[in-house]
Image 1 (cartoon, rainbow, N blue to C red):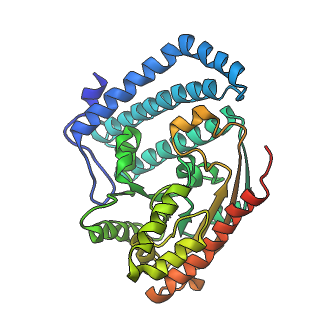
Image 2: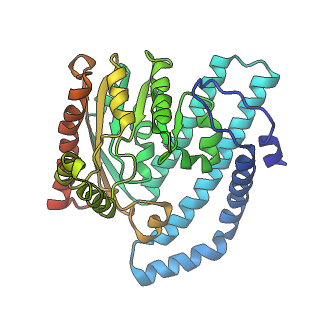
Image 3: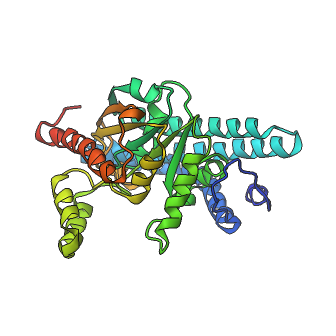
Length: 352
């Protein structure tokens, strides 16, 4: 019954950005998520003792058991969020909830969901977090936020650590529409889902610029300018690609200099900084969770007793160059600082 309710033929979005609504996709993903929200907790009496036994043998701080509990929590939390989303949808259609109140309600669901996943993951796996420069993120002046991307967990970092409710608009890869919680809620409020590897990259850039023009005085835009999670293998593939093209000598030199990050020079990020002249620029560096590349990595202990260190700084809008020739060198200067922050942990690893 629930998947049918969620497949109602219309949806209301306060987001002026083109949406990607597929009811066939939603029917499949919503049904799967509710099935897993039942099956995962129900199977714990069988799977959890086996995981605990494995933890005793492997002496890995019971990482597999922690992962099973977290995945059960994940699907239950997601489906609870979907029910909240349905309630707000019904309130909007049947009770005359105003469009502004509808957007605020969906933002609260987004924040509750993100913070629930982020903080529960840290607590359940015994991980700790240190944040330097949180005041730069809490600053109410809207900004373009450029965050390092090396883990599934860092996608929740800005909403997770912000001290008070903030209005964030995200640039998200379209593959994440497979998560129904994002599919429903994130498309009802100003966010944009971009298609990587498209034959029409300019159209994706225009989506991002349209996001910058919407409510431009009220919210901050969150971007992961590397375009994908960093890994040594991805860095090497990029080096090989640039080395094979004589006209990419500058990009090759940049990629070589960044030993622990990927170049943050995607067109969407560069254009966004150019056209968002009223916004500050915020950089978020982090280290300590690089091995959490996917949910599967949780079973191997990638997050168990980890120490997530975050460093944030802000550049006032008046000090950010908007000349296209100057933007890339400016961002690279600060991205090198992020790279050095990560590299320092490799040289002098912190202990949990």
